[in-house]
Length: 78
Image (cartoon, rainbow, N blue to C red; front, side, top):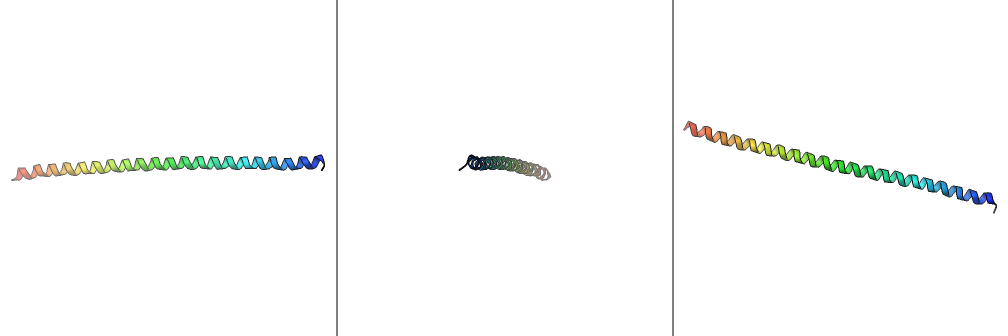
């Protein structure tokens, strides 16, 4: 084997290592983005649940207030 053959063999491996490193970095980047998107989706869902819970509570308070006002009005008529 000549020295040129040996150098050619190593050159191919280094390119493969660089490609493997690039693929690994891309996969890590994708996992990080997916993780961030998942966290954002969970936060959005939590905020939406809180908003709906507050809206429901406000609606129930309005109904309670309406019933109390209605009872007072009925008492005055009789």
